[in-house]
Length: 191
Image 1 (cartoon, rainbow, N blue to C red):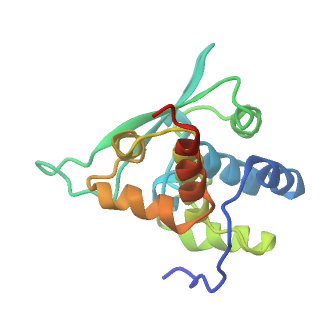
Image 2: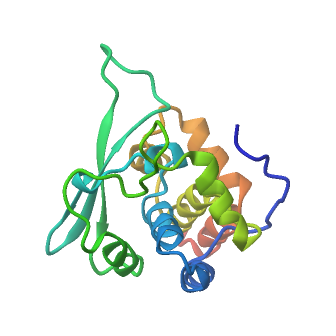
């Protein structure tokens, strides 16, 4: 069971704030975790079991393979998706620094426990040093910023692997000024 979030933020985590947290993180595992959560907006339970072999780096992208754990397996097979972040994205150097020197099929966040990787609860505890930061806030933050920059509901559904458009709308409405930003965009319409 994860610790209950009792704080409420009025806004999402913007890149300027996340850069401060990344610089404050003394433990490279925490910095790596923040980078992955920020870059891809995936659930903590989808990030923690990542292995080095799930990541491919080329000249243009850092591609990461995620197992989607919240959707129902089809034919007994869990959905697997590749998500990309451009090499020139501001978050990419933090990911590259974290995975540098890692080889083979090892977990990114290894543990001696029965899972072989750090638990979601441990990861949440790591982030508690930043006060009002929790894993799912990174997901909300990315969704809101994408919406503020013109992502449509179908695009959000495709990126975040949501099966229901209500989920996309909920994410955008619950954090930050996204609704105001999007409404204001239409104030200067030509018709």
